Image (cartoon, rainbow, N blue to C red; front, side, top):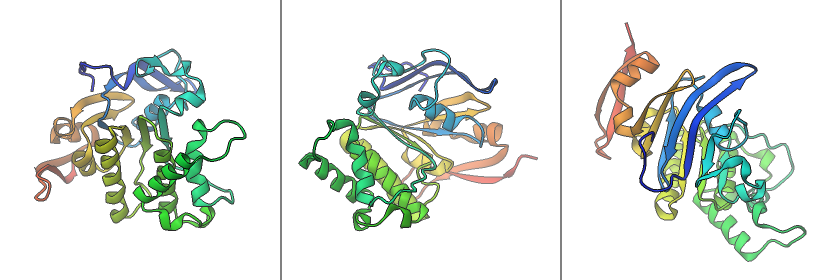
Length: 268
């Protein structure tokens, strides 16, 4: 990720520093995300993963211009135009409104709608597609307030898909899901990436899911990038020991042929 890529990066972060109330939580973050790839941020709690994602999403604002989308500084975008480039799925999303699931997903089409305009056929088709991809079609007429946490999470992801952007940012998108739906969402993310060449940045805690689904991994600790590169390069026992204080070994997933990390216990 820090390594220079030949083409224009989809996302570039250039020496990003960010503070909460004078407490520096991100320090000299430098990375490039290649278009059409899946990049995963990993690291312990409090390492700065979510803060970094929110800076890229323009939810938080650094002291100086440091985040670029397709070469354009992110704060120079009109917000509605930025929403056509980038969709963001937060870790927690509180929906205390009496809207149907379909209405929530349709909100993803807002950047493309003119004031007082009717919902178009294309809008409806993209909503149908997003519901299908996230296995939420059967929930379309349900009130969003009556869904479980995992169901709501899938609906919010469906809304991001309906937004039809080049880039999707997801902050722990599987944290409220059972193992079946975790795999289902990760397969959906990979399918979107492969079929539509959507650039995906996401935060994950599960290192084996990161190994299985990521093209690149950025390992953070203490607000700094400790290592970055391919998933296989970064998720190595030495890095895990240094950052998580855990001994581990790498073996091979018998089904995928990819590396599989086995934690052995705390470092003595």
